[in-house]
Amino acid sequence: MDFENGLNAIIETIAERKALVNTEEATKMTFIMPFLKVLGYDVFNPSVVVPEYTADIGTKKGEKVDYAIFKDSKPFILIEAKNHTENLDNHNNQLVRYFNASPSIKFAILTNGIEYRFFTDMDQTNLMDKTPFLVVNLEKLKPRDIKDLKRFTCTDLNLDEILSIAMEKKHYRGIQEIFKNEIENPSDEFTSFFAKQMTERRMTSAVLDEFRNYIKKSFKEIINDLAYEKITNIKNNLQSINDDEDEEQIDESKDIVTTEEELQGFYIVKSILAQINANLDEINYKDTLSYFGILYQGKVTKWICRLYFNTTKKSVSFPDGSVKNIEKLEDIYNLKDEIIKAYESRK
Image 1 (cartoon, rainbow, N blue to C red):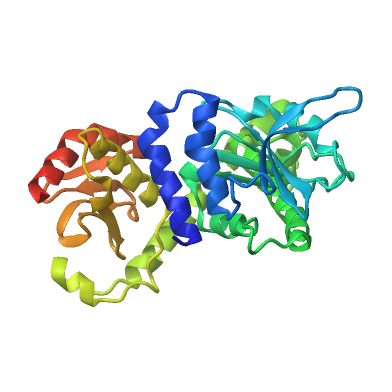
Image 2 (cartoon, rainbow, N blue to C red):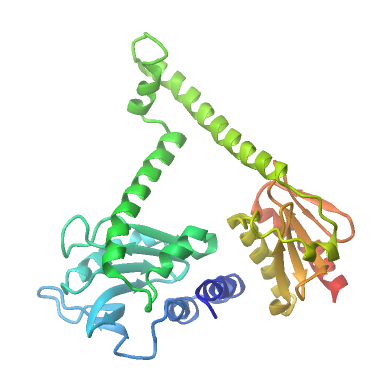
């Protein structure tokens, strides 16, 4: 199993078993240890992965961290694990204490088995940074996340390269967070920057509030326009394709981009079918330029449903010809009866 397939297997496990995993220990066994195995670390070799690693901190002796990963007989990654239901924002301080216990520690990971936050010590040597340089959510996995995670695999590990990239990642994340916050709730400074270029009025609270609303609406329009342009470009590159059997004869791979939303939709459908004990190994997908098809036994002639997410309005179509519009991904759960009916018709 290659790296990406290994990650996808964990994502499927999360979708199928999350409701059954109720404790921290269960989270470790079901989600976190398989993740470490995908990274290439032998979780059953105590010279590589040490559970309940003792990290003496000053006068405090016997402090334990959930896992330590060793390299050249020294710990270089510490991992603090929480139940998948936990909010990781509440647990940074605990990991900070462990980080400076040994100068060989290069990275710390805080995780609940679904979200992984990677820390290092860029601001001050041997003191863990307050903010992570990398955050990966397996339920919202992006293509760049796969590339970033692969750098931590046992066979491809290059500490100098990771530390170099970590600085860039930290700044990228910081800028993105600032930009996101300014779009959602423009600060006075951000608002006045635009307002002063458009009016000579004094920057009173009323003027700032007026322009704050302009800025919010302007950014929404910019984002919508960019999305529209991307969709239009995709449509312009579409080729005429025949349904079902003819699809297999067309190589669309260079133009197809499987999105995060499409994959999440796929796992929602699988979670619905898991409720009726469907054989989930027989539920596959095939992405095309115009839609994302969810198939039974990998056959395009036995499609269960098709997700149309590359259009202005999202919709899901079924073999009986019905089409259901949805506002958000969670609405797929409301189509449970249609999905099960379509699946049963393909068996």
